[in-house]
Length: 86
Image (cartoon, rainbow, N blue to C red; front, side, top):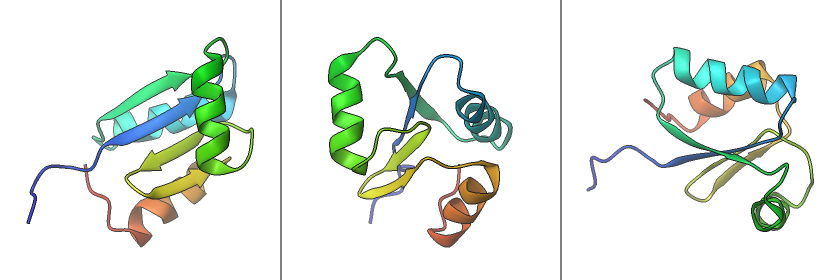
């Protein structure tokens, strides 16, 4: 059984207040994540659309789990529901 933490991939858009809140929440709670700005990266934007079947940010991907277009409460519930620890 792997003891490595799950890889968190956070798709964001420049100037998006929800994206900033998601980054702040993850950072403040000790999560390590990779942030990808889809504002100017068309390939990343298309990948986010393919994975989440929508166009809104933030979108969080952890392994096979996807949380699209969320706020802080939904993020906290998602992390708890899937027992995702920092």
